[in-house]
Image (cartoon, rainbow over all chains, first blue to last red; front, top):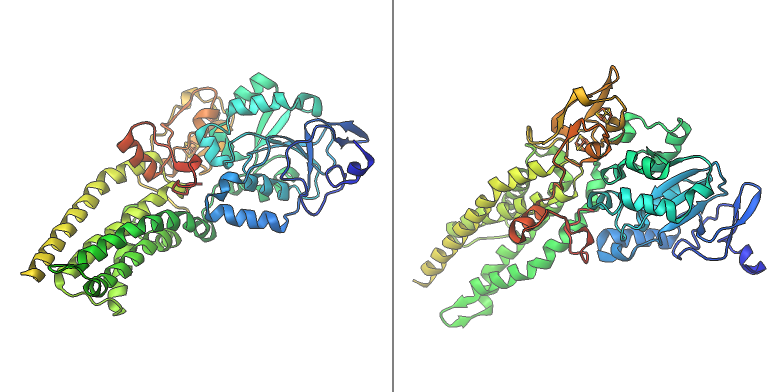
Length: 374
Length: 100
Ligand code: SF4
Ligand code: SF4
C-alpha cells in the first residue's frame, strides 16, 4: 500500500475518534499492527471505537424504519486498537448497531472482532433464526484464518447468541472454546476485567422502560399503515345515506370513531408497552384490553367525542378495547420474556373473543343504520 | 422488576440424572432459570423460561429439553393462516412486527 494510505485512519494504530472506515468492506492490501510487527492482513479492517454523528443517525433511523435492513457491516475480521496474537476475539453480527455497540464497549482496548454474516440482522433475532449460528461461526473462524491470527483458542460470543451457537460443536470443529459474554455490550469491560466472568445481573435480559419505549415506533408504524382502511370504512358507514354518500354526516358521525380508533391504536402500541409491568395480569391480551378500555373511557369523559346513541357507545366499548388488546398481544414479539407456549395459549383464548367482538360490533352498527333510516 | 409471563406453560424439562455439572446452562440462560447447586444444575423458577432454546443447544449431555420457538403473536397467527413454522418478520422488508 502507498505511503498515503498508510497514514489514513484505516491503518493507524491508535484508536480513531470516528469509525472512518466502518462502512467499507475489508480491504485487500492493508497492513495491521500485531504487537511489534506490521503484518499484511488481507482480511483485516481497522475500526475506531467512537460513534460519529452518522452512526447515531443511522441507529435512530434503524429503530424507526426499515432502514435497519441496509444497516449492514461486511462480514470478516476487524481490529480494534492494536491487537496481537494474545488479544481477545469477539464475535458479532453484521447488523451495524450490534457491531457499533461492541466497538464502543471496546474503547481503549486491543481486540479482534469477527463479524458473522447474519444478513444484517441483530444477534438475538439472527440466533433465533440460526443465521447467527454454529455453522456460520465455524465457517467464519476458518475463513478469516483465526488460528493464524491468535495463539490462544477462545472466542467471546454475545450471550444472546447462545440460542444459535452450540459451544461444544464449535470447539470440536475448530478447537476454539466459546465463552459467552454478557447480555449487554456495555458490560464487556467489567466482564473481561473480572477474568471473563459475568455476574448474574449481567446474564439477565432486562426490559427497562427505555427498552420498551424505543420499540414502540416499530409497533405504531405498521398499525398506522392499516389505519387508512379503517378511515375509509368509518366514513363510508356514516356517510352512506339514502341520498348517496354525503360528506356532512360522514364527518359529523365518523370523526368520533376516528378519534377513538386512533386512541385505541395508541393504547395498544404505545401505552401498553410503556405500562407493561404496571398493568395487572401477565396476559398481554388482557393488559392491552385494560389499556384500551381506560383510554376509550378517558376519551369519552374528556367529552371530545360525543357519540350519537347508546348503540354507538356500545360498539365503541366493544370494538376499541378489543383492537388495543389485539395490538398489545402483538407486542409479545418484541418482548424478551414471552415464550411460544404462552403466546399460543393466549391466542387460542383471544382470537375467538376478537372475532365475537367484530361480529357484535358489525351487528350493532347495522341495527344503528337501519334505525336511523327507519 | 422481574417480568413473568403465563404460569405453567413453559415446555422446559430437565433431567438431573444426565447433568454433568458443566454450568453452560447457567451461562447462557437470559432469565437465570438455572443455578448450580452442589455441582449440578437446578431449576429456580420454570415460569421464567421463555423457551429460547439456548440451554438445550448448549447442554451437550442432553439433560435439558425444551420446545424452542418465538413467542411472537403475529408469527404464530401467520403460521396458523399460511402454515409453516412460526417466524417473525425480522427479515422481511421492514414490514415485520418489530420483533427486533
Ligand atoms: S448444561 Fe447440561 S450438563 Fe451442563 S450444567 Fe447444565 S444441565 Fe448440567
Ligand atoms: S429455554 Fe432459554 S429461557 Fe428457558 S431455561 Fe433455556 S435458556 Fe433459559
